[in-house]
View 1 (cartoon, rainbow, N blue to C red):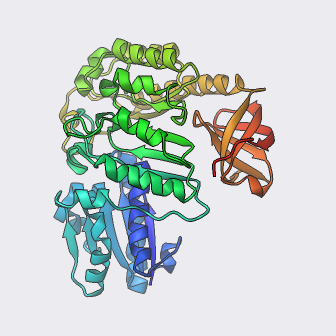
View 2: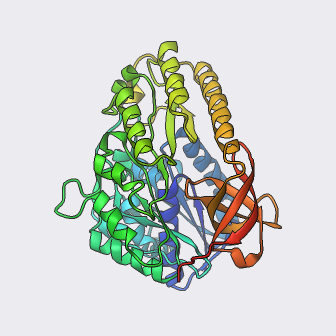
Length: 441
């Protein structure tokens, strides 16, 4: 039996997809990349932004035609499933099952029930621990892996639907996490990324080690060469976590720290729990502790009530901090959230105009930073053949920048040293690649 998983959203969704794929493959099912060739199609969804939701419903229209032609089993998992619950059948009456994010461990049961024409709908929170503990399999060719350390969020930012679809915060026991990371190191994985909606609050209310302590433990695990984590909330960025940068040799010099707005008035409306000055102070502390750290962020423009002065403050913050990159979006109201009912709606044309100006500024900053790296010799973890050319390899620096360069296939999944020849807006061009003298066993 063949299955295909169509995936939307962030790294957390990517990881959930791999968990489900591992469970199905473990039951003897074969994974394929084309939904038209599959007996079972699972659509793993995201509703954090309107665009992802629109893409999902567009895909479901196409899958309905595939189902009617071939009798394919079609199921929906993830955030849209959780948001819609049983109502999803009103809009998509042809689907065979629907599971919320806390119930992906039931994916094989859902498929088996669908084969007997018994639709499984499960949106309870009772299974979140079981879903957290799924360990996806990684092939011998894999060089990096994701490890979920917690799920959910307690912050209730006024624009964010995560607490409603991913639930409240729940952390894994550190012992389970460390065992999983050690197993990955033994398997040849060199880079692990710790995942959670707000990793900074890992174990905040439990009698277990803190997030900085967890990082220190992972730093001592053999085989692992690099540690990353996403995502961080500025309010919960502690001095102890800041001290980990530059202090733990395996912790990469990169942090993704969403600021969302440079206006204190808008930040208050967003219920972010910090001011722009407090955010800036934490970034300065990070740079003081680790001068080479790359800082990326998320930003929303056109939030209800945002005026030209608020937007100017956002642009000023970007100028002052000089981010390495920003994921920026025009505000889109999400069901259940406070912001969806706020007055002062910014016209879409104005929000998109502001977004254009912000992205233009950030492209200039990113290009300048990348060009400043020309002539430097840096460490790159080789991940794959480049999308740009089959004759090139691609990998990432410790600061999470993409580097494309010529080199033999024997460099695949290895740490190499590359001299940056050219900096572009979205990547770096390398040359003279050579293996690092010291390689992990």
